[in-house]
Amino acid sequence: MHIETPTKTVAKSPKEVFEFLMDVKNFETLMPENIDKFEVLDTETFKFALKGMPEIILRLKEQYPHEKIVLGAASDKLPFTLTATIAERAIGQSEVGLSFEGEFNAMMAMMIKGPITKFMETLATNMDRI
Image (cartoon, rainbow, N blue to C red; front, side, top):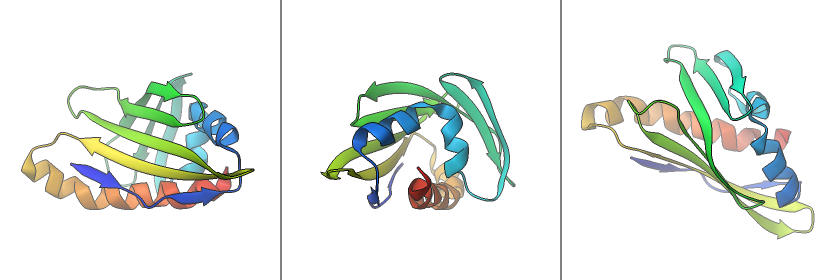
């Protein structure tokens, strides 16, 4: 399953956006208002839960300075990645795009596509908070 958000213009340089996203505790700032739980487990891992959804643990998997950050599920039971792509738009301005990639059976994909799409859209909208 592949979900992508439209790119979002952020009034920060790619370096500033990258450094913000590399600090996992900052993801709490981007979370939707219906967040039920947010906990930093270590410098590369955090877990969160939205109301009515199970806990999800995300870990930094890959990083390409000032260009891309890949977070992935800490568990192999539901393998997926959340990728933030950063591009310079102008001096002091960046474009950030988010994409979700996961391998789920058809039934699971049907159940989670709506909530994940809404979650991704909220993360993209909240990029203004950086």
